[in-house]
Image 1 (cartoon, rainbow, N blue to C red):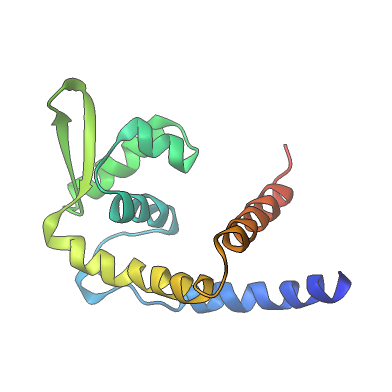
Image 2: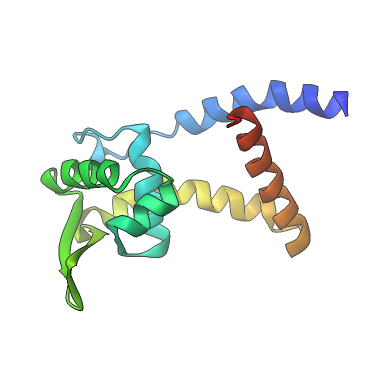
Length: 143
């Protein structure tokens, strides 16, 4: 167990460093994108348009926090907001068509790498890997 922990403790900073070196595509470089925007953009990229409350639940933050991020990114033209036609109180958020390809290029690299890394595993092994990462995250931030 100690060897595995040592390996992971040495590996994690290197992994984070490599992820941070993925440059923002030129088409998005002029925008004020921060790390907090990445998860929001990833949900919209991989799951499609979502409501503000749905995004807040997935991101585990308050709806007001998501509203502020969406407002900021909408003013910059990265996101589009529209009323839900079935419930006008609900706002649906999506990536603006003109930025979808650049965001996909940027965040899609991580998806390709995960797909390649997880491909040799069985579904049960993949789930155990994901569960382990989630348990690690939780252990870093105890209640």
